[in-house]
Length: 118
Length: 111
Image (cartoon, rainbow over all chains, first blue to last red):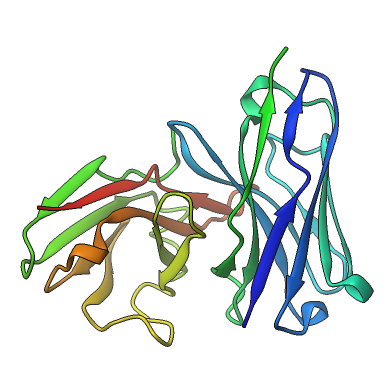
């Protein structure tokens, strides 16, 4: 059974940093692209970052230069380093697996809440 | 404001059919057949219901179907059941640097 379990969320002050982790199990982690998607209150879902099996990374303009996605295939783990956090980054962050067709997300974790507030 | 536009809410009675629309642009829905739909019961992990416009993953009932016309995609749920009550989100790949865009979500209420 595929499982994705996020951790590392919490309360952080504006300008602060946080590192999210996602522990994957039930599949060959190294063979799949992985993504982070967040859900902000009242704004629905927003794609945050992606990492390919070769380690190539992608970001939308809203987080580029502030967030860094990485993976450790030996540990079947995905990470999101978030720096220079803003109030607008407050959201539930989901770890997701890209399906075999690459363009959709076939498994999601239950999410971890990040609150940016003073 | 989300990149894709969905109605905030829809409702239907058990056994009825409902359709949720998802409107984008010629850079996303209109350009690619990479539209997907997700069901989200609050507090749980979102679940993929439809991928590549109209394909169902294994285990998703055939009551769920997807389609696309121009810049608008649609999710239809026939034979509504109580357990279908959830939030539904559409998503599309896009030619912009954002790469993936989502709708704002539609709350389905089964009356």
